[in-house]
Length: 120
Length: 149
Image (cartoon, rainbow over all chains, first blue to last red):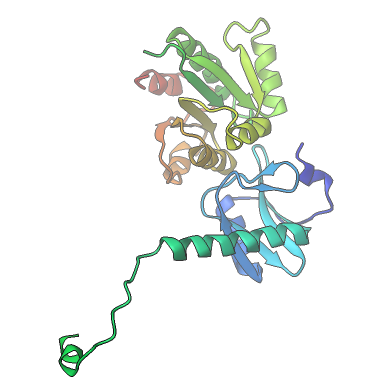
């Protein structure tokens, strides 16, 4: 049993499909982040899912999908400022990495004469 | 050459009878072909397996499904082949997870009453082995036999 089941949680959808659970999170969260399957939350839960796996933030609550082989997918909500901060931090890192890895635009030298302006 | 290669069989919910017989059959077949086979499942599925194969003739290694996922994500273990058994949306979702976390060649073994519809929802890289089988394992066994290992 995962640590998640021993925490104080709320269930928003039960025994549904993964697609419906993802849509619920996307429609009912103030912020939505996407993670890969295997993303670790809390002490020992590795997210099961079909990419892109949506994680939602609503106030202090994190919404996420929880999949059980015999019972389908659940949408759970657990208050966790730490996990929400991790999601936001991860998003910032991703953004920074994409800016660093983006196409390099070489700054053009300023025109030194009137004819150079027309060449540009 | 399959010596030293590792195969993983991931059981889904054990409520459809054909799953257990095909897991035992495939494990035996892979073992004979030289693969080191591990079977993963929920506690209930692993118990069913152990009662069906009390002397570990067909399956020598079993592992808890959640622990296995943790170990693959943490790069403690991985496999060359992975067969994920599924007859429901949850099983399909587990298959997607293995497709994302493991470098193994993935086979989606799809069975049950809605096998064809379920197979259509698989949009991750996997070779699909599909048979509308619930009680009679032969349609699925015949499809498994056609897979070149």
